[in-house]
Image 1: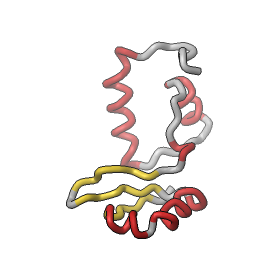
Image 2: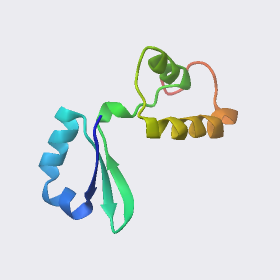
Image 3: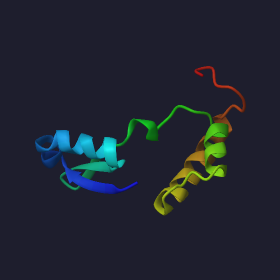
Length: 92
């Protein structure tokens, strides 16, 4: 997946094109206001409410995490592991 930074102004002016790139090219956009990233526009399937088990199965099956996301993912798992339930989610 390609990742791009885009100003909020540019995102607003070219919104249809941005959405097209997200949908058809799986591009992820980080929307910047000033010097701060304030939002992300990503493909809908990129984020799911699946369980940790499902995520681990996807990774084991060959799903790819970008190098910059590996440490962030590991930190998130470590931070949330005391509150995670193993087994089916009540929201599934």
